[in-house]
Structure formats: structure tokens, C-alpha cells
Length: 197
Ligand code: GRF
Image (tube, rainbow, N blue to C red; front, side, top):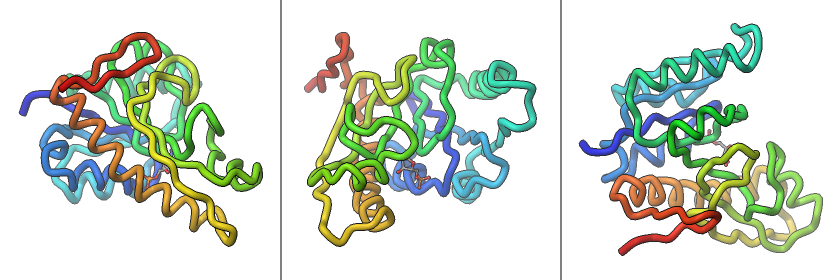
């Protein structure tokens, strides 16, 4: 079994599915948690026989109380790594100081951080955007970059078509990055992530 991964997801969970479909990464995933009661990711997790639980943001007095309940649940599973697979909440610094955390983002960071990366890339008129997997630090979409791949923007793209092609790349990069972590092959030195042989 080795390293233990807890996945946090807010949405449909296609990135979670990619982790579960990846032969060597899947066995490391021990639980899925969400900030939303009806996240598709929770259904996918339950379908795979994994513990799946929502810690809804709205049920709490504020971010600190919500985050401390979420942290208590995460701690139950004693993870070595958290993976944010479409998790749309900002985690407090205490979280990412406690657990190494990977995030997947639908742009070539540092371009277009935040929740509207695909829309913003289209509005800006860039010819290339892409997907980034990075370690999470205390700033949004900011930490050391593990993997990136470019996706060309087509003239007739809308947000849905571009996001779909970016997600196809995410579904490859995220499980590969998690796999490298589980094999002890990611070395973080400041902003730089080296992939060890
Ligand atoms: C992904 O595109 C991810 O980059 C962004 O949210 C989306 C989540 O999709 N942060 P899914 O829930 O994994 O299908």
C-alpha cells in the first residue's frame, strides 16, 4: 500500500476518476472528501468502494470552523498526500503546512490563476493555454510546479470545448504526478520540483 492519498473534490470528479483509473495511483487513494453534499466525486468514490464524505462549507460558522472540521476528517485517514481534484475552496496555511498537497489547475500558471482560468484565457485571446499540476502553498494557484502541458486554443473554441481538451490533459498529468510522489520521486527545492530518477 505505501503512501496514503486523500482526495478533496467539489465537482463532477473526472480528475478523481482519472486517479482511480490509473493502475499504480489508484491503490493509494484511501478516502474522498468534499465541501459539497452532492458532489459527483462523492458518488464516484462510493462506487469505487472508498469512504466518501461531505463537510459542507455552509454548515459552519466560518472558514476557520469549517477548515478545522475538514482537517479532523482528513487526519482520520492519516494521509501522506492530499490531492485537490477540482476542489473549489481555499485551504488555510495550516492545512498545507501539515500535509503535502497537489492541485490541478486549467491554465499554464502563473497565467490565469483563480476560478475562471479557461474563461479568462479565451477573453485574453491567448493562442496557448494548458494544464498545471503544482504543490499547494499558502497563496492561490501559486506553489512549486510539478508538471505542465500546453493546449492550443482554436479559433472556434468556447469555454466548454477548450475546457474539455484541457481536462483530457489534466487526467493524464494529475495521476502521473501523484504516482511520482508515491514513489518518492518528487524533490522540492524552493520553487523548483525535480523529478528524481
Ligand atoms: C478541473 O478542470 C480543475 O482544473 C478545476 O476544476 C475542474 C474540476 O473538474 N480546478 P472535475 O470535477 O475533476 O471533473
